Every structure is written in structure tokens, then in C-alpha cells.
Amino acid sequence: MGMAPDVDGGARRPAVAGDPLGGAPAMTGPDATSGTTCAAGRAGPIRLHDIAAGYGRAAVWRHVSGSFAPGSLTAIAGANGAGKSTLVRALLGEVPLREGHIDYGGQRPRDFGYLPQARDIDRGFPMCVADLVLSGAWRVTGAFGAVDVALRERAARCLKHVRLSGMEERAIGDLSAGQFQRLLFARLLMQDARVIILDEPFTALDAPTTRDLLHLVDHWRDEGRTVIAVLHDLRQITQHFPSVVLLARGAAHWGPTRDILTPPLLEQAYGANAMFACPMGPDDGARPDGAAADAWS
Ligand SMILES: Nc1ncnc2c1ncn2[C@@H]1O[C@H](COP(=O)(O)OP(=O)(O)OP(=O)(O)O)[C@@H](O)[C@H]1O
Image (tube, rainbow, N blue to C red; front, top):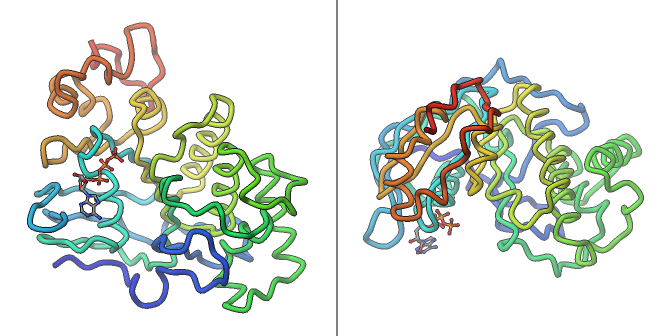
């Protein structure tokens, strides 16, 4: 059985009353009063050693091995049902491992920030924008939500960062899908987590919103945070994520993006739809690592 982060030790479910993300694992953060204080140098890589996970009798995938280096950007890709969310949930200790183990490199549950899929979030919860952002600092505010001026100012800066200034008092249920996604990113900023896990963060967003949030992801990388994102858009992966885990037929192909998103492996992952999944044509030069276009030709 793999070692999960100590998510059942009270850290997985935030104790903040009224958290609409209840059930999201590891929604905790390090010292949220300290601004962007990611100390990437103090943590080792997160290493997966031959892990398997699944539900009921069947494993969704097996023999998954690889590591997330501190400060790395890694995408998780694969067809619907390939097990991307399962991998994320295994990382967060939500799905128990059947085989293998995970070495968290000294990182604690509070070091993880998690953005679940939009469909898993109850937006009907009566809560305003400011309170949702502040809930990202629950470790500082505690169960009774004591919030001082400094914390409110910091929440305002997080909202400004995602262009939601002035919306503090709006009910979260009144936001558009794009505004709500920006809000969730503001909450992640508030958490100041060292490892940020995003599950389909750009689904249903327009191009400007997606671009803004991708800039934020780049910014996190520049700060030395580790970002792991489930993505369907292979072009986004090739342009922003130097590493990828491609889930295909119950196995994982893990490595530099240009080595993994190749026609044979894409065909293995997407079958007859591989050509639709192919990330780019020959004239699209954007690469995370300056890789030559012939990797896709
Ligand atoms: N709670 C669950 N109980 C039983 N089976 C589940 C559960 N969650 C997921 N599965 C199954 O596990 C497999 C992988 O699901 P998962 O959600 O990890 O895939 P995914 O790659 O994230 O899919 P998508 O791209 O559609 O979001 C699917 O066959 C799914 O039906």
C-alpha cells in the first residue's frame, strides 16, 4: 500500500465552515499570511514507485512510475476514462493504492493545493467571493474564521491578480463559469501551496481567460512551485508543460512532452481519434523546451 499524504489526519477536508469545495482533498496551505513564500528548495521530488489504483476489482492503471521534480510543470493526458482524475486522487490519498508507493519528498498535506473539476464543485453554496478566497487561508484563520486586515488585503490582492477586484460581495453562485474559475485560482493563490494540482482547469473557458490562467501557471513555475495539471488540450500541453504523463490502455508513458506526444503513443492513447488529438501542425513552433517540430511530423 502506498503512503498517502496524511490527508486523513484532518488536513484533507478544510474545517472552514461553508467551504463549497468540501470533500476536495488537501485544500490546505502553508502560511498564507506570508505572501508568495514557496520554498521549493526545501522539498524533494514526489516519486511514484510502480503504483496501481482502481475501483472495485479492476485496476484503472498499473505500473505507474515517475517523479515530479520541485518546480516542474507536468500535464496528465489521456482519453476519457483513462484514469487521469484517478491518478490525481491517488496522489492526494483519495484513492488507495493497490500496489507500489509514493514518496512525497518531505511534503506535507498542507503543501498541496488542489483544484477539482468544475463539475465536482457545489456552486449553490451560499457564500460570497471574498469568503471563498479567504477560505484558502483556513489554516491561518482556523475553524472560526478569524480574519485580520492583513489577510483581507492579501485576499484583495489575490482577486486583483485574477481580475476579480470589486466582486468581493458577489455570491459565488452568481458568477459566470469563467469568473468562478478565476476565483478558484485566486483561492489557490491564497493557499500559497508548494504543489498545485489542477484537474481540467480550463474546461469551458474562453481564450482570454484561459490565457490569463495559463500565465498564472507559468508564474507559479517561475516561483518554483510544482504544478500538475490534467489537460485535454494537447496544444496547451506542448506549449506550456515540459513534461507529461500520458495514460493509455492501463499504463502510463511519462517523460519530456516532445518524447511522449508522438503519433504512435497518441494512437495508443486515443486510438482511431489520434489524429484529432495530435497537438499541432508543422507551422506551430511553440514548444515548452524549444523542441523541433519534427517530433510531431
Ligand atoms: N468513484 C468511482 N467508482 C468506480 N469507478 C470509478 C470511480 N471514479 C472513476 N471510475 C472509473 O475509473 C475509470 C477512470 O476514471 P477517471 O475519472 O479517472 O478518468 P479520466 O481520465 O479522468 O476521465 P475524463 O477525461 O472523462 O475526466 C473510468 O472507467 C471510471 O468509470
